[in-house]
Image 1 (cartoon, rainbow, N blue to C red):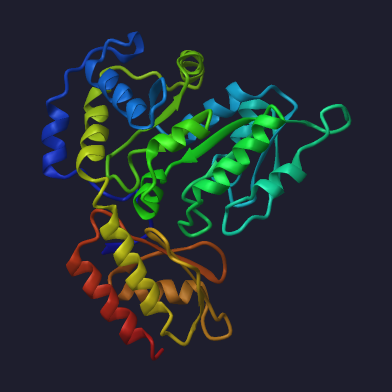
Image 2: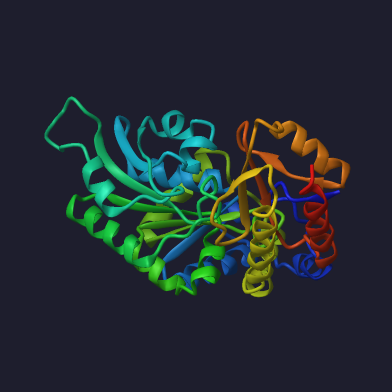
Amino acid sequence: MINLISDTVTKPTSEMLHFMMSANVGDDVFKNDESTNALEEKVAHFFNKEAALFFPSGTMANQTAIKLHTEPGDQVICDHYSHIYNYEGGGASFNSGVSCKLIRGDRGKISAEQVKHAINPPDFYHSPRTRLVSLENTTNKGGGACYELEEIKAIRKVCAKNQLAFHLDGARLWNALVAKNHDPKEYGAEFDTISVCFSKGLGAPIGSALLGSKAFIDKALRIRKILGGGMRQVGYLANAASFAMDHHFKRLAIDHRKAKELSEALEAIKWVDSVEPTETNIVIFNIDTSDFSADQIISEFNTHRIELIAMDSAKLRFVTHLDYSDEDHSHVLGTLKNMASL
């Protein structure tokens, strides 16, 4: 099967596996794993942040950031598509006792003006205290949409004026950096904390990192322990992440090109009602449900050895990735051409 469900389905390359096995490991709970320490220094330097901490998942990294930026009863401003609200198991309320003020942005992207109007008056004790603004770049439910740096800087100014913390869920930030040709250090300058994922577009088997000031990351170490994220000889996985940064980052442009070609092929199909703008490696398309159901379309693709996912009853998604070969791509494009006459 050609798996286009997500970019999390990749397997380590032989070169990555070899580099993993060369790790110089210790006990990371005691911060004695040299390969993990090296990765944390490397990713912190990449974004020009003081420190970083390796996590088993992006959800745990995001939840740690929320926990440290807020107190129970506070409120987090985010888009209604946000991963921290939709796909982290209600962790914001469970772990931190906070609520989310949801904004309907543009494909998962919120504006400085929207943030400004979403802030609760600090002296109005009947409403939750607004404490944190969280962005997601690229946006998952928004189809891999990317923020413009100018808008991020404008939101940062609103946060600074209102004494709000500013967090970035950068699970697919690597894709945004390539698509927009942005300098990662500019992100480090704007956000108080950033989470990045190594197991999506970069193709590592597991792992994320949380970046921030040294004082913040020192506190994050305790929260990671409380959440059960302390790991031992994790340098093997840290080496996979380090290899991914060095060898799989710039090639993301290939995934973006293939996604764009899939998007263009879908636009020529009569039972496809619309295709959302494709900026990176996620292609979201809406079908005309008067002709077919999402389950029927998925079943038809499956007969052609292609796996994809439905996001609701009419919305489907392709995600290109490291293991999606040129041969796979030709097969999918040919299948789309043949399915146009359904």
